[in-house]
Image (cartoon, rainbow, N blue to C red; front, side):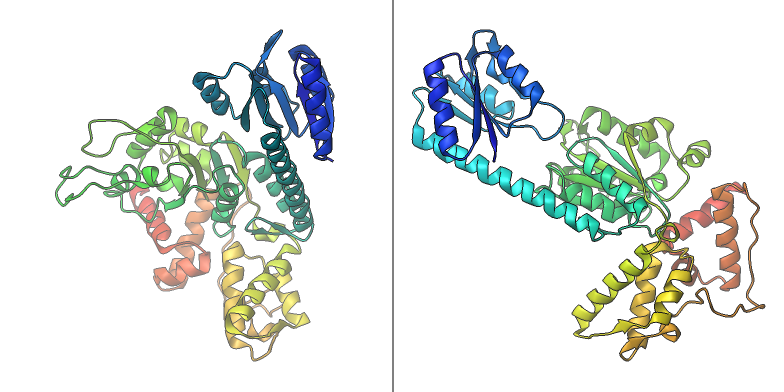
Length: 448
């Protein structure tokens, strides 16, 4: 049963409102002053606060920030001294509705019914999310392992806020899925979600792509162009591979984050933007700062709320859960009914998955094509654990304590040499984009 708190210094009106609330299915209690209301709020948080605007010891609006941690109650203000200014102020503070004395009972009942339905729906959604989590699903994410449950906890805490989030993890772990889940479970869910891969945009164009440009600002600028920040206003901007953004542009990004406004290329007037920024990187960020690839002040500004995604090899039975999910999607798309043999499941469990979820998805797709009906071990296209080792297959030994940057460099160069310089094949094997591979190789040449 939803709970209502009625706050009014007029005892007769207070009791009448309590009676109406109870008839509409609320457990209702009253308070005659701001102080008494605060005492009741300290004991428990109601679903609804129905309060007079002018109380003997303060304003009813002051109760908006007094609820305990957790979901905030809906607030309906009642006043006998209505004015446009007070109505606007109430709505700006997030008040659900604004009623004038004498109270229109039919309207009040309609509002109470709306609150009751909405709260019931919220509880149902919360319970459903809890059940889905037990089954290994949260938003767009899949996984029941303890490491992923911790990620879900962080997403649930970060989503309702406007704080910048920095997602880290190896390539292919699903950082964009986390960003989309953050957006879709936030208050900005009805706004746009704009994703930008900073490594895929040429350095000469990325400033225009992010911040836009005015007509005539450079050769070829024959029209006004709104950048990703403006297109994401009211929603979320996801900046993937943030360390690949040119350092000189990171200064401008930092200014936009701090001021909430930007200047288009060739523009003269600042433009206000309301954007939540989520960034991601698969690199060691401390190392990127040390190498001058990432500004330290920007890192601090983006890492208000960090979320780290575990590699697939640390997620246990999530490997099988994800494999079954990808197979189900393929069966649905292709109108098939293929299934894994036990031997295939064992091989999936045994592989180290250096390319993480992206690699697993590709393996399942290839196996689906190769299999007639049952997907057995022979259909899996990679040399997974359990296969006999090929002594001719080269290996790479890396000492414990080697930096991740150096390990990446040695692995990329060794794989490139083994694949005869075929960059597309190397990118596929390592589970990274071709653009990222080219960026890494350019860094290695510059450092020589």
